[in-house]
Amino acid sequence: MSPPLSPVRTRNAAATRTAILEAARRRFAHEGYDQTGLRDIAGDAGVDAALISRYFGGKDELFAEVLACSPNIAEFLEGDREGFGERVAQVLAVEPMREEKFELFLIMLRSVSSPKAAETIRIHSQQAFFQPLQDWLGDKDAAVRARLLSCVMMGATMNRMIHEDFLLDDQQRRELCAGLARTLDHYVSGEI
Image (cartoon, rainbow, N blue to C red):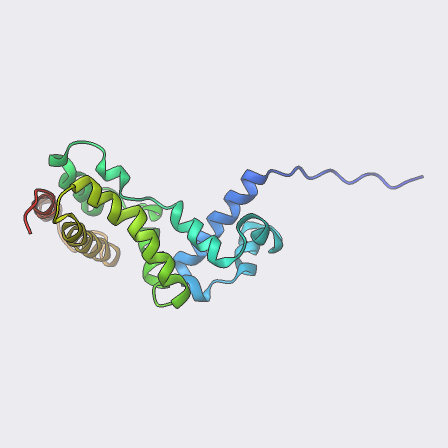
């Protein structure tokens, strides 16, 4: 009598790839590039570490893919130019903080000191943020204005991450949001 057959585990490449990306995103956000190991990611995803190489090639490629799958500036560029400041200010100062919105910032912040990760972050920032924003702004000062917008947005993000409510009451947060929107719109309008 032969032993019973073990149940066949179904393979789902898309689900495996997604699980690896999610585990990597969380690890890179909390530990940074240098402190994150492929075995840790594989363990979090419930897969063998060899699958990371199979799906992504290695840690560098996985890191680049995590960045590529993160939110980018495109959602803020939808709609009219006059509404840009309000759209961004609402997310940065008013809407409830959702971890996935801020994880890209954490990943970059915790990983940029790594020589390997820094170049990938620079390339990603140019392709997913600065170039689309410059194209949308569309004039000779667009590169400078895109960097100014980035400085304001990153500063607001850092403040929000330190103190979710900015240590302000509701009325003060509405005023902060309005001021942030005006500042962003100032740079969108072409003034430096």
